[in-house]
Every structure is written in structure tokens, then in C-alpha cells.
Image (cartoon, rainbow, N blue to C red; front, side, top):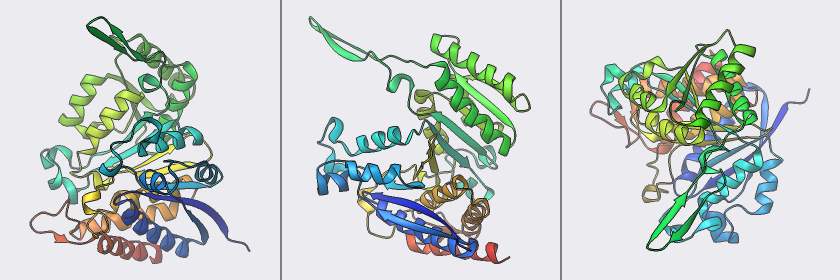
Length: 364
């Protein structure tokens, strides 16, 4: 009997991207060896690495490989070396182009704060302990992409403008992603908008409510203004299960939520919507520690856990999450998280700790 095979494009990128991607691949290989599927890897350049090699942050051949894969794993892009570049030559522009080509209209960012990490939060441990939320951010519309936009000189003054635009289909599809995920979790969705001021938010609220009433009435739904949502994330993040919101608000709220666990090095993400999912840690490229075995690989490793869920390998995904929790519960910490009483480990050592926890889970 032929084993199920998945084709994965690896885009390690820049800075610590190759460091954390290497450990994520080791975790994927371990999961595959215990779960009866096969992974084929195709490593390609992206971001600054692709600019250096081919003078393009996302060469056409790389994009073609990504669109033909089962999933894509990205490490990180950018760094001071390429800060002088502008427009389509910036490393980050390749990522935006990739998301668009993959039809990735929903960005998923889970944030959890288990007991072992509560003391790492900048907030009080008792305020964040037990937090387990998922931000679903609309990724391809809203004010970042709306037209018209521009800058116009007016005598001694200049005018600049952007347009926040959403259509019913754009809101409908991301709302369905949020409700679907809530059905796998604690069956609660908070839709965040600014409907008391913005006409576009009034449409957002109406469409989300319609989708709920028509197809997801078994899921609890509440609407919340974005300013209150920001405050509630600090006051009582445990109240949230799934948060769904537009591009601008989601950008801000997901980054705010990312601080709850104490380090961006813990947070995975997935950009989904088409046949091919894009999975990447939330953190940046941190070029100052690249290649030094100091980076936190947990976000990249949890990102491949999300990838395994996307591919339908739920048990393997569960093993990845179990391994991470076991390593953290045992006190293993990379430099970004290490406090008194913890055991400081390197990038590779943290990965090995996680793999030990995975192995025990899969054998048990």
C-alpha cells in the first residue's frame, strides 16, 4: 500500500529563518516517521535571499513551485541589509505576492498561555494564565488594498488618502472560516468592527450576523468595537475563543495578542483560503542572532503543527503541540524566555526537547 505523500515547499528566507526552519523540518520528519506519511521537500529562496540570488524577492519559478505544492513553510524575510530597497524590490513584497497567488484570504494566529508560560507575560500571570484564543484576520481586502489611494500636493500642503473597502463575499468567506474554527474549539466568535463610526464596518457586522443566523446559529456570536476589544485583550483575554476582524484591525489586535505569552518566538500562523496553505512563525528575521543557535524555534514548530492539521494529519499535529507543551513544562527555555529557575537551551536543544515529548506521545 502506497503511503500518502505531501509536497512541501520550504522558504527559509533571511536571518533566523533558516535556523528555525531546519528545526521545524526535523519535527515534521519525526511526525511523518511515526504517522505513516511521506514528505517531499523543495527548498527555494525568498525575500532578501532571493534578491541576492536573482534580484527578485519572489522569482516566478519559486512562485510556480509554491502554487503547485501541498503546503508552503516560510521562515522569515527581511533585514537591515535590504532596508534601502523600495516598492516591489523590498523582501516583504514577495510575501504579499505569495499570499495573493495562493488565494490566502484568512490569516490564523492562535495565542495560548499555559501555566508554564504565565510568568513570562508582561501582564500579571493570573490575568493571562489559561488564555487560548484564535485571531482570524481578513488578509486581502480592507484599507491596505482599497482604491483610490494616493498623495496629492496642494500648495504648501499635501493630502494623502487610503480607502477602506469590503464586499459582501469577502466578509462572508472569512466569517465562515471563523465559525468553522469555533466549531472545533469552544464554539464562540467575537466579531470586531467599528460600526458606530464606519459604514464599511456596518456592512461587516450585517454580513457576519447573516452568515451566523443562516448557517452557524449553534455558535455563540458577539459583536465588539475594536477599541473595546483592544482593552479587553489586556483586561481579560481568557474571555475570547475566536476573534474575526478586518485587515487593519486584525493586524493591530493580533500583534497585541502576541505579547500575552511573553515572546513572538512562541507564535505560529497560517494563511489559508486556497488549496495551498502558507505557514510561518509570527516573528521577524532577527539577523543579529542568525546562525548562532539562539533563536526560539517554537513558533516555526507550532506552524508545522498547523500545517499538519491543514493536511488532515490531526494526530501528528496533536503530537507536535504535545511535544511543545512537554518541553515548556519541563522548564526548557530559549534566551528570549529564560527566567530564574528555568533551563536555558539553544535552538537545536529546544527542538530536541520537543521531539522527545512527541516521541513519547506517539509511542504511547
